[in-house]
Image 1 (cartoon, one colour):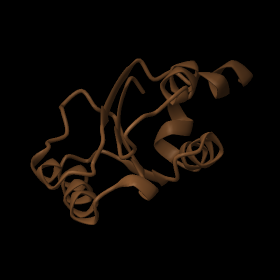
Image 2 (image 1 turned 180 degrees about the horizontal axis):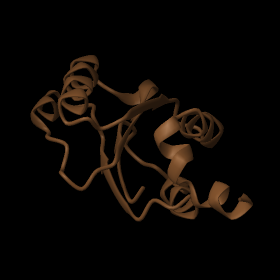
Image 3 (image 1 turned 180 degrees about the vertical axis):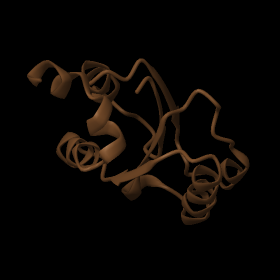
Image 4 (image 1 turned 90 degrees about the vertical axis):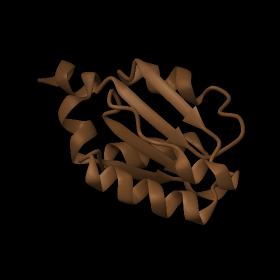
Length: 106
């Protein structure tokens, strides 16, 4: 997986660096708090959408879920903590199949 779109949170801190360690190269971030974010589209190079549930407008979340489904893009939900994000990604079949950490174990 190369492209990841993160929806939610104003600031991500070290999260993008940790995601790059897992193999995500192109990371896009949208805060998801403003009402106008409902119009935001999922770019074509995105392989996975990660929604940070504690920092997002509910309408944005619902519209994004619908767009992800229409584009066949998997979606994961997590709180804005590395533990929660890592757990959500680890439980996603799409991420696990392409994870460079798991490929090293084979």
